Image 1 (cartoon, rainbow, N blue to C red):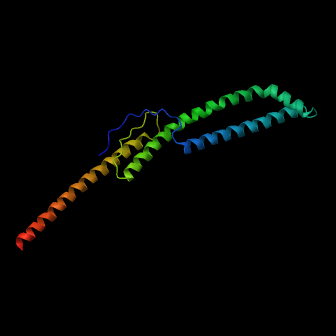
Image 2 (image 1 turned 90 degrees about the horizontal axis):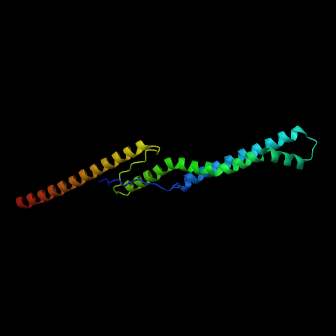
Image 3 (image 1 turned 180 degrees about the horizontal axis):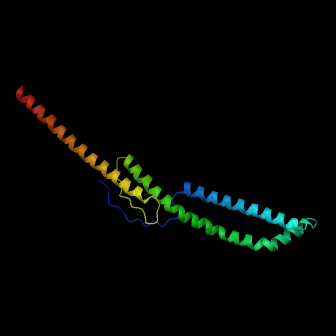
Length: 165
């Protein structure tokens, strides 16, 4: 039998370290690549304005011209990461619950009925899994009913055989 569903008050933003960690690392890598390429391009453009000045002056001029942009980008990076974790929670959270329910089914246990939050991805999967669990539960109950009937029939046959002997 499917257990009653519990309320889903998921507060954690980092629920699947493997998936969300990979996403965070990829986001940081992309941000660093973007910032590095942007820095090289801005330095190159600043240097091309006057290729005969010393490189230290090119760096200083580029910093004063483009430094604020890189500071803003650096300040926005944590916002990008946190927002990405919130977004990834909308698919990682449901998958964590889905894997737990599948594991319960594989162990022969009745999983709790699951219902994803309105903002989660793959909400239809929760209904599908609940229907599968209910169907397996019905088959299990039907099979246990057949086992009792077969045991009763076997006992009845033995009784008849003893009476006929």
